Amino acid sequence: MSGRGHWRTHGDCGIMMHTALPMLEAGDVATITGITGTQVAAKRLADLGFVRGARLEMIRPGWPCIVRIGGVCVGLGAAFQHSIQLA
Image (tube, rainbow, N blue to C red; front, side):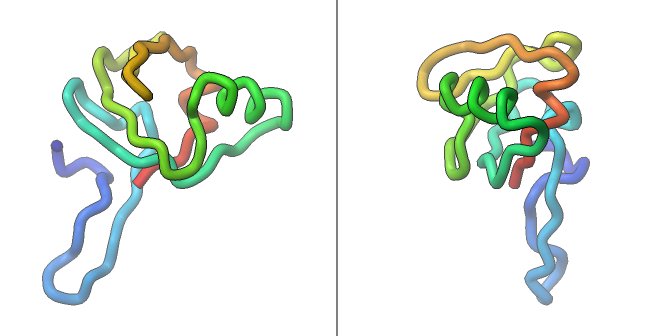
């Protein structure tokens, strides 16, 4: 994982940082901590497996990006990318 905004401890104090999906690089893995946006968007993402606690891997960053979640590759446009909160 690159150091740009990913969850990792900061020194010995245990402070954690979070990241957004557009900040991930190819090969980075993160855990979903929440979904923001409309109920319709949240339901659509949940139907695709984007739920709290799920782990995803960035396959190809960009617009749209491609991520692997639950063994399936999914393409996500900008609006959906910004709705997914990660750790």
